[in-house]
Image (cartoon, rainbow, N blue to C red; front, side):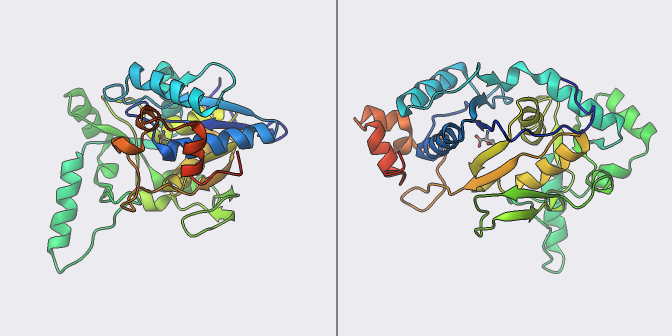
Length: 306
Ligand code: GLU
């Protein structure tokens, strides 16, 4: 592994797919959909299929949930190649990528807390009914105030033990890259397909690492997809906009660009996105209620395909 050593080529002759759940709750039928179509695409294309446990939040992820995921996947008939990768075993890989970004002056310490960012946005909006921009997940955009703190003050505040996160300097990173895009062969929220322009600006200076969790979803997913040689990322449309950040990180870290397929989401009966606490749609409770694999396949609209 040599992060930041230069551009790698993706070998599409042996496609590599992955299913990457977080073991912080029970898998629901939306996960079943994602796992089944990923697995089928891998097998139909004579590719490899990997299982990755995204458990960087070690306070919320548990070994028991991981074992349940494994059991549910077996029940669904989904098998994987190689040993499963557990992100919490690989914090050193994410630290190496962060160091590369640090050496290239593409990250800086951000001292503003989430609460301070929220209050900043509220104060802004109290004036004249203005609206402070939100990121695609609906959180107020970080205003970038820590970016211009002089280095000596940064060093002093860090040495004094003030809490901080590492943020990507988006403007500096974008200045190093040409206009970015990605190959989408499924569909975006509006059915987009083909070459999609990446727009990382919608996220602002994203957090790449914290003190309690020394990486972030964006950083670890980018590093792992590269280290595991993933050629085809198949995941839900809720992550469509995240791909813009991933393309930027891949480019500045010298990683190749996988192809992407952002699939439809399965919604609950109330029309809302399923969550890990959506008890009656969890695979485990459906199994306990006597559902077979085929019942679940039918429930998520994949009958005929499997
Ligand atoms: N761990 C993420 C999730 O459970 C998926 C990440 C990805 O597929 O890129 O939603």
